[in-house]
Structures are given as C-alpha cells and as structure tokens.
Length: 89
Image: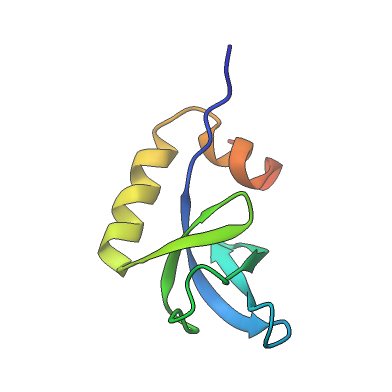
C-alpha cells in the first residue's frame, strides 16, 4: 500500500525565524507546528496556508481552508498521518 501525501490547511499564529529563512507557527485545529514560509512570502499572521511536509506551499482563504479540512477529516487517519497522533480519533 502506498502512502498518500496531503497538503493540510492551517492558520499562521506567529512569524519566527531569520530574515533569510522565514518560518512561522501554524495552528491546525488546535495543534501547532513550526512551518517554513519561504514559498509563501506574502503570508502574514492570521492567513491560512496549505502545508505539505513542513512547508507552506500556498495561501488559501478561510472558507477554502475549512472546506479542505472537512474533506481531510472524512479520510480515515489522514490528519493523524500528516500531523501526528494528536489528530487520531
């Protein structure tokens, strides 16, 4: 069985890191993770981003983030597989 890699939406709650490596803390429905924001240089605190393997790969609006999260919740173990056991049912 092959693994599926997903992009998970989250909200940026803090900006961190050095100017040459833009980082942030992203909240995924209560679970916070450090994320590299190098690919989303316009993203600011409060913005929603799609995160894949620790990198924000695009910005989305709040409605699209909620819609995507709803779909991911319908896939068994999708969020736990991407973000850790905090998302296990």
